[in-house]
Length: 253
Image 1: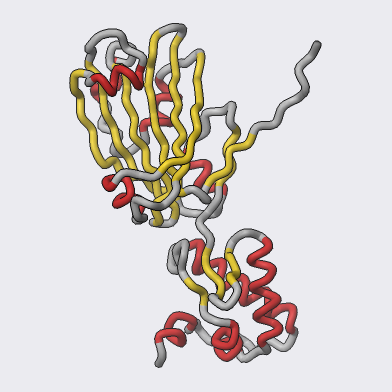
Image 2 (image 1 turned 90 degrees about the vertical axis):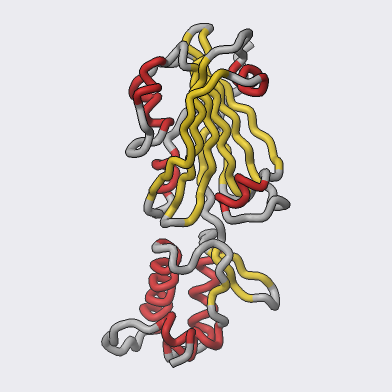
């Protein structure tokens, strides 16, 4: 049995005579392999002629199924190269604080996060600049990796101002990510988002399984309680994996 045959093998089903039903079945099979992570972002889907042979159908039926999947943004068709699984693209409003778990599950992926590092330390000059501190104070530094169906979705680098949130020192952040924990434990009164495109450093690139030359979207968020800085977090997404959306009305005169 060839590698392609093994990849596409399934329990025998009743014969399908209707081309419309068959093209929907091809779509469902491809969607399932993508959603379970069996075909991760960037994976090349078998060529039309191979899919047609596997499903015992015409290339026209396969072509229709792939065209419709490409229209939804699930796959990308490249001339003379084939079809490839697209990186999942989430949408997040610019003026809201949204849980990454919700973003991942909205894409039909299975969410999981891993705490990579947790350390209480005295703030460095970089820490103070990120949090807007005027003097050396203790901070909690946390790094996490958020995954969608076991594929890296977002890297998180967070600083917590211990003076403003002392209870955070007793939390391990192994069973709950820092974001939802903070939202449920600490009231905030003001937030700021800064967005830019940049390349990741070697450490972040390794966790996201990309090269350091891959463009990424960096989303920096700062939150305050009145004038007290609470936390600064930097989220790193693959450049094409996220859209930031703002809907607004004309200013009143």
